[in-house]
View 1: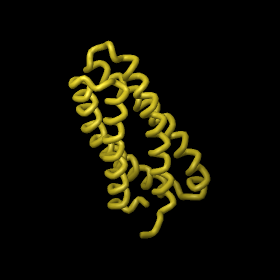
View 2: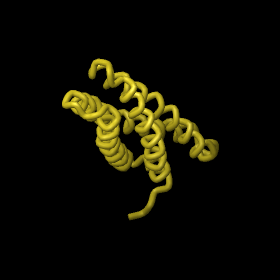
View 3: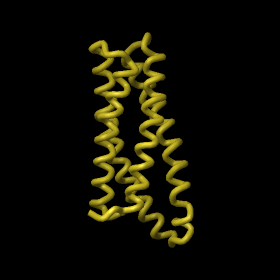
View 4: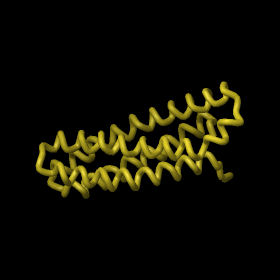
Length: 141
């Protein structure tokens, strides 16, 4: 199987963002451990999204700024549209797994930081697989 550099960079960025976001989300979940599980789950995931996408967009920009300078604008738009579509589908899968698993783990009494880490690991793995499949199927990379 041929290694695709852009797909490799995106998955590398996913992993970097995952590590940072998962660590900080676990901290937030633990800090909110005395609150209602519904609120803990919701605020932990919102915080994770802010951290994840803040870092991801910075890394994506750094990795692609030179490449996009040499591309025609219609090709850039087409690629970004395909990527956003793939990420959107991945986000539906991520959120559909992350919220219920974190809430369930909190409800059964798992420590909040452990519950957050486990649900983040499961949801991010599914997210990475789905986005990679969508990007390959749409022939974006």
